[in-house]
Structures are given as C-alpha cells and as structure tokens.
Image (cartoon, rainbow, N blue to C red; front, side):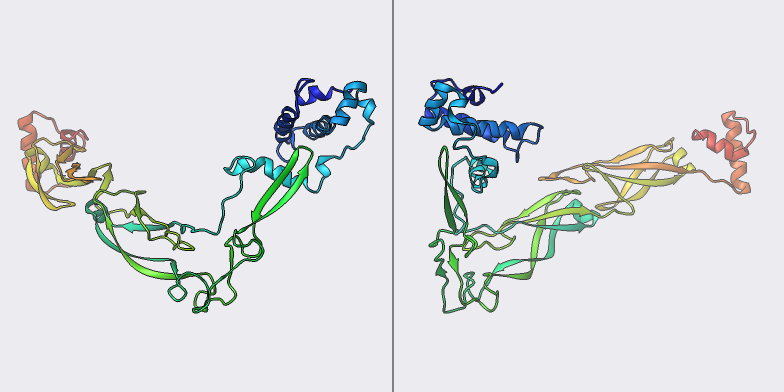
Length: 374
C-alpha cells in the first residue's frame, strides 16, 4: 500500500511551500546515497523526491489531494533526482556546511593575501645543552618571496593582468534550477586557479611562482630545562606568504641525546657512584661529577648498597623559571671484593671476632657480604 506523500515528508496537509522545502532539504541530506549507506536508503531517497516533486507544484498537489496518487499518473512529470546531471551541484550546495561553511554561503575569495605554510624542524641537543639552554645555529630551507619580481611572479617591467574568465574574483559561478528553487555553485576559476590574475610574462628567476626555495642560517635561543618533545615556535620563519600574505612560523621540536653518565627524571638528574666497602663502613668524602662540574659528596658511615644520596639544587632548571632547579640523586653501589690480600684478610678476621661473627662457608668474603646484606 502506497504511503501518503505528506507522511513521507513529515508535514501536515496544510503545509505551505516553505515548510515543504525545509522538510525536503532535511530528508534529502539524511537519505542521499552518497551519505547514507544503509540498506533501503536509496529507495527512501527516491520516495522523498517523488513526494516533493508532486507536492511542490500547486496543480499536481491539488490533483493528489483530490484523487490521490492515481490522479496524477504513475510517473507524471517525475524525474529521478539520482539520475539528474545537475543534482551533484545541488547536493554540493546542500552540504557545503560540512567543510565549515553554512549551506548556501559563498566560498572565500582566493585572490587575496595567503599566509605562508608553517614548517617543522627536528633538532637534537646534548644533555647539558638541554639542561642549561643557550643559543643554537640551525639551517632551514624555506620559501622566500622572490626578490626579482617582489612576489608578483611577473617579469620585471610587466604586471599580471586581470583574469577575463572570472573578472578578477578568482571564482566562477553556475546557476542550477531545482524543484525547490535556484542554487548557485561557486568554484575556483580554472583559468587563474583562484588568484584573479593571469601572468603572461613570467619572472625568469622564480618561474612565475613569486617565491624561491632558499636555505638560510638562523640562530635560535634554547631555554634552560627543555626536554624531549619540547616545541619552540620561531615566529615568521616558515614559508613566505603569497600575494603579500604574512609568512608562516617555524616549529622546532627538540630531542635530547642520551648521556653516558647522567639520566633525567623530570627536573632531577640521576647518576650512579661506586664506593669501596671500607668507605661504606667508615664513611668518607668523595668527588662526583654533576652537570655543574665536580662536587664533593659525603658518604655517611654505614651506607648500604643502593642508598640514594642527594645534592640539592644540582638538577635541571625548571622550564620558564631557571632560578628553581631540581636535585641530583646519586645511587650508591658498594664494591665488595671477591679476593683479599693476606694482611687485609687478617684484619677482617679480627674485626669478625670483635663483632662476634663466626666466619663459616664463604670465609671473609661471605662476612663482608653479610655486612652489606649480601
């Protein structure tokens, strides 16, 4: 049994022309086969078109209201929109909002200034360079405005002429009539590619592009405390803009080389130091390396293996606040000898007697290991 056309469009029987048009647009967007891939969507789309085609014309609507679909014939005046050569234009007009613009709005004129592209450069730093920052010289390859033609692309002494196809607008328009009104499709002019100008005598230096690829040296400032993945923006050092547009920016992504001695955890520096078992037992003062140079470290008597000692304010400066620094955390390991000399052995055995330790299997070496939890 055939469905009622008003029901298909979801409108009342006294709906006016504008109500019909809005209902049709909404449903056409929803069920068009290019958007809706569900089974039955195409048949539903044709049904919607059929209903609107009949109800949008006063004469056929009057016949339908009086006699139903039989009163207008099975295919009177109906044309499948899916087969219409111009429907692609209508559909593009419907869905222009998908690219950021509202339906029916015109595309932006492309003949005006265009900002240059942003560029990315990956830069590797040594560990200490990342900690303390400083100046770094880099080389970048980017587009610069052609000095010969001042970016016009035209041979010196000549000027681009206004495009005759689009009369300088950079756009061409095509009107399409549909059952619910006339739509205008706006597209980029194929003659001037949207610039609004045609260059007849091209600049020999840049080939009419108005830009040239150039390599330049650049000094950039690295802040103290940067880490892997830190991104620096160098304003105005990207590609040059077109038609007097501003240049893009250069984004420098930083990656830190591993250091053979130091590691990093946030704003703290980590390292290891090995001491003798006697230094661990008796305590001592030793010299250790830090990112600032050599520093004296106090080893407390009775220090156990894997103890972590701290040198305050010898870590990484806080990014954006270099006065505030992290700490240097030093993990202590104890070097326990596998063999000892005769004199040293005798001394250790005396120590064992004083402590009341019985030296069994493993001898003195086992005694030393026992002292340090071995």
